[in-house]
Figure 1 (cartoon, rainbow, N blue to C red):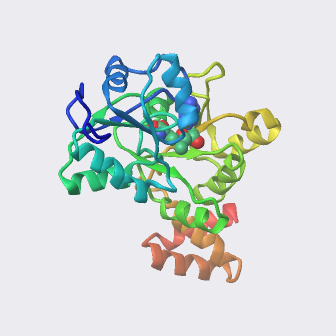
Figure 2: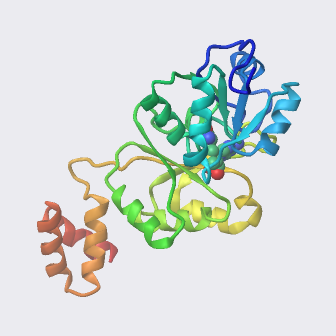
Length: 286
Ligand code: SAM
């Protein structure tokens, strides 16, 4: 029997997308463990990293490396295996595959090739963080990682200025300070933010405060920037009387080159705001 034709597959030949823990090794479902025990092959982002989880649950299976850099070339090999009768599980280093993790191209190609894809749900940092943050969760926007480069990050945040849903970002310890500083510059110092740090791990902690205070808090102690972060930002609030943040930013920019009256008039035209209110706000704040 060739490698592609197992004698007895315990599971139907499909691709199983299996969520694994984001910290606490017990956060894995019974169905996820059973699936990993029964598939023919486990495709993993980092086979050494996943090896620890698998050995904890005494799961011994052939591992197939599938990461961002080889997914497009190697995905076809997995599809061929499934077509030949093997069952394949996809796991990532933590949480749900495809959520800021590899797997999109593989799943997309499976769908195109008529190969069944079965989700085995479990932890994901975005949902875990939202569930305990105390921000609105009826609607939210998952933004993943912001661009690493300054200009790309600023442009992305500017696009989100009017976003009224809670926004959720993944962020690295190296960038969290700069990202908060950009949020203050673009969304304003009063915007409420919540940081969820080290979720499900020993030092799990939540911090909720206005963005301006969060910048100070992060700068206070380098330990505050350690660990894994989910950053949540309250959506923009616009009531009848308030001026949108994007208009305020335009006014501040124009005021650097024009008298306040003129800057307010132009801003009012661009953003459909009241000239007098902009002028008044400018007198008080600029
Ligand atoms: N697939 C994962 C999921 O379902 O959440 C996300 C993988 S992404 C490459 C890793 C990022 O997720 C981290 O940089 C961090 O922003 C967030 N993250 C993952 N685990 C976390 C945890 N235990 N606590 C806080 N954030 C976490």
